Image (cartoon, rainbow, N blue to C red; front, top):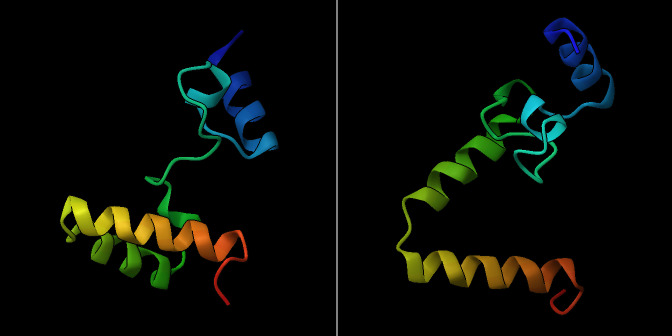
Length: 71
């Protein structure tokens, strides 16, 4: 398939080229900051500054929020 066609498909389905090539299971990449809001970028920067232990705590907390275990 021509590369230009792959780009068109990725744009049409709102996925990354890596996803189309089965190189990742993530449909979008975080490097595409054009669609990430400023507050989301700020949260990511704060998350990256945490220790591995605290990152685990945050991930557990988010999972509990998403699953409705915490209100």
